[in-house]
Image 1 (cartoon, helix red, strand yellow):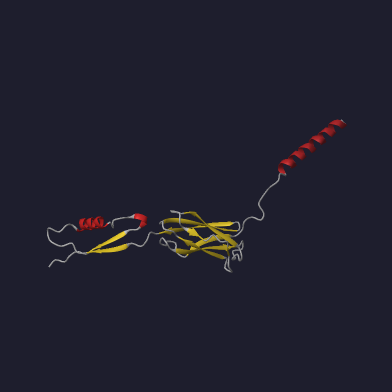
Image 2 (cartoon, one colour):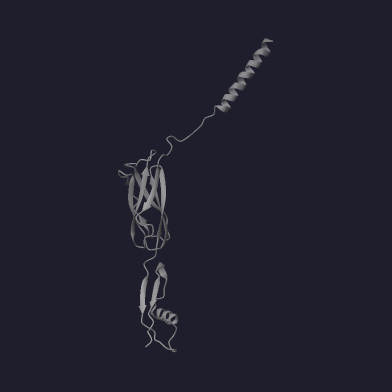
Length: 183
C-alpha cells in the first residue's frame, strides 16, 4: 500500500506542475507604452496652388501637458501632383508642445495629406488645395435687335477664336457679359 499512496502523491504533484505551467504562462507587453497625443493643424486648410502654409503638430504628454523639446519630422503621405513639398525637419516642440513646418502646395489642386512623427506618436492633417483664382473677362456688348446673335453663342465663339476657352491646370474662367442697352 505504500507504493499506491506514493503513486497518488506523485500523480498529484505532476498534475499540479502541469496546471502551474499552463496557468502561469508568460504575459508580454510593451513598456513603457506610447503615451500622450499629437494633433495637427494648418494656417489655412484650403490654400490656393502655388502658396505656402504653416503646418503644426501639437504634442501632449500622458498627463495632457505640452511636451517640450520633442523632435518631430514631417512628410507628405499623398498629393495630387508631384511638386508639393514639406520641410521635413526635424523640428523641436516649443514650450507649448508645438512643432511647426512649412508646406508648399505645388501647382496641382486636390488633397495633400501631411504626416507628423513625434517620438512614438503620429498624426496626419488634410490640406485641400484649391485651383488658381478665377479670372473675370469682360466682353463688349454684342448688339441689339433681331439680327444679334444670342449672347452665349457669341461668348463661346469669341473664346474659341481667341484660344481662351481652356480648363487646364485647374484654372477656371468666369465670364461676365454686358448686354447693350436698347435706345
